[in-house]
Amino acid sequence: MSDAKHSNPAKSMRHRARELAMQGVYEWRLSGKNAKLIENGTRDEKSLGRYDTEFFGQLLNGAIAHHEALSAQIAPHLDRKLDELSPVEYSVLLLGAYELIHHPEVPYRVVINEAVELAKTFGGSDGHKFVNGVLDKLAAEVRATEVAAK
Image (cartoon, rainbow, N blue to C red):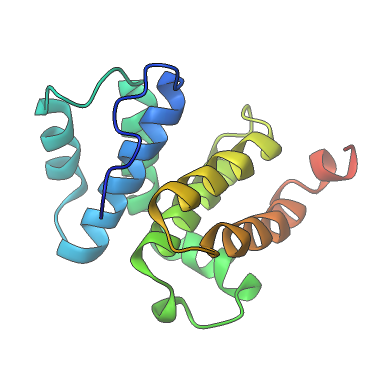
């Protein structure tokens, strides 16, 4: 997985935290490493630029700790089985679902837009459209009042 746009200083610290959390979930998905090992490895790396370390830890640990429940909430909105998703799509969807459900202070449109950007940066050519559609359906389910008020 390439780390495109690695050190753009214009990126928000929260966006960079989401990128690093997505990479951590991706690493967990492929290696099965413990979330704390991944988190500590990321925190120990000095060349990653500035990012919101607290938010990064919440996203990484939360998405991994709740991956079974999150996967169950994502699955009904997929056009294929979970195990047929690319590791990037799965990682982005897991993070997006975690943030939609566990961070209601972040507007749902921000969560979806950030996930789409992650999919564009790290995923295949049309993965961002898939991520957008799945998270849009999930948002309508888990944040019905907020979505209806748009």
